[in-house]
Image 1 (cartoon, helix red, strand yellow):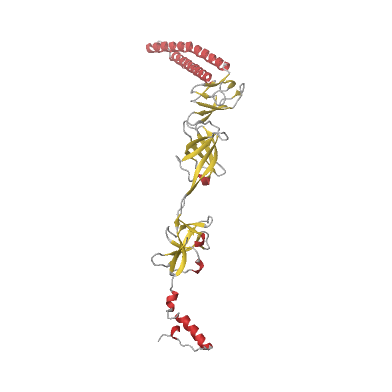
Image 2 (cartoon, rainbow, N blue to C red; image 1 turned 90 degrees about the vertical axis):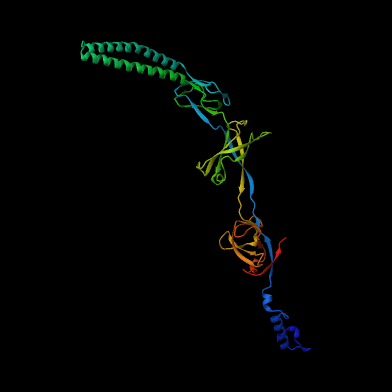
Length: 373
């Protein structure tokens, strides 16, 4: 017969022994309920659904400067004294326009000298040609000696070389005279004057900086950690005419992302502007790049994580909706932002995760969910 507290008949004045017996009976039987039933009673656990993390974005402003896609430094191919600069900064010019000139007198004198030398070389060449032809006819009939023929051939070769040298000098003098004028290589604008008039300069000395026409671009210097997410062709927002009442807002596209560091850990990024943009090289510009935070995982309250020894790792308790039991899982997470934390591995969106009382929970324990409001 099973002894229960409900069937005990106690005296009106219980002794110490009977009181102890009653307490033991109540603890062992639970007034007729088996002890195993109490041990397996489901624990009420405060839980919350794991929420899929969402991507966030923010605009970052970077300073740059407008430049022409093709800037050239113009110089004379010959040396001389700069006498005329026919353009000013910002002037628009057509292809072939004369931009600057050297003193023309030395080039005119050299050309005249070359023409005279070329003119003098022609009669000597013609005379040497006639003599050689005569010696060839006499040699064919045996009426001349070998020495006379060789002398005529040598005179012809010398006269021909002298004529060729004179003609080459004449061509060079003409070319130098043409090069004494600096011409625009294509349509564009004058970006900078580098030398004043009356300067004596050597061949190749920079005189002007020239920007060709075409879609302008903004050059940026970005840190290495920022260029990795940029893609050629990506649209960006560009603002110019900074500090004015009505700044100019344009849509640009990334045209180049430098993969090689320029020094100091920065990379060059070029943003191409629309062809009809009313901007000029040298203007300051601000480029807005959208920084998107790529996320993969779920968002949970920080109280749902039991941190482990290794940073970024820990454990959570997930309640199985079918078996109604808790499962202890290892997770990976990132640094918390406020009261929430991004779990990147170990939990799936929609799962029920315990968010309170974690030190008292056990793996495999039966539990009843209480959703956190």
